[in-house]
Length: 122
Length: 110
Image (tube, rainbow over all chains, first blue to last red; front, side):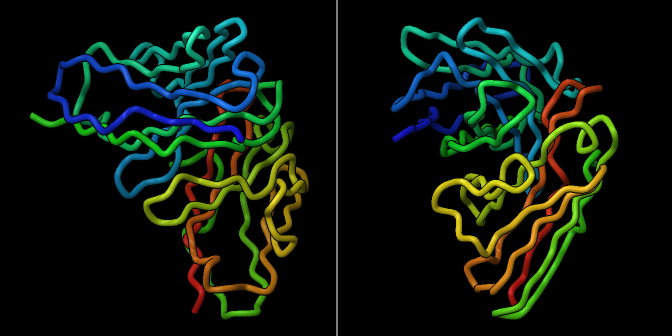
């Protein structure tokens, strides 16, 4: 079975850097898009970007463009989300999810990670 | 404020049928397919419906989806207490080049 296992919770200060991970197992890593979905405390879901591990083609939400980097390491079937300078407003639960279709605009996110809670506070 | 608009809340009694709407525009629902998710408190979202009306393996046929123009709906028949959750619609937006989620609908089973 497909599994997405995320790295553990993080507590950081504003201005610090951070890289969280999402390890994918149980199916081909390079032929399905992977998304990062943010959920701020008490709020709804917000897709901040998607990446195709086969060629690292990446699409970012305008709301985070330039503020985060999404990447993959195909040798260890892992996707990453990183910040160079965190803000308090980055405090949220972050989920990775696999898009069941090979095309980025179709299909649903059929497998999800357990979430990584990122807390940013001075 | 989400580009995909859902009612913030919905409710029903056990056994009833409820529907949740999702309104978008020509750049998202009007030109792409719609997916639906539900999320229990403290848990990751789960895919309920994809490509407008398809159910993943394991999702009961009490859940059904439909789409017309720039709107979509999720229907839940034979409402059960375990259906109490937050429900989200989602669609790709061709203008923003991103997956959009609706603001979410909190379903209460009375």
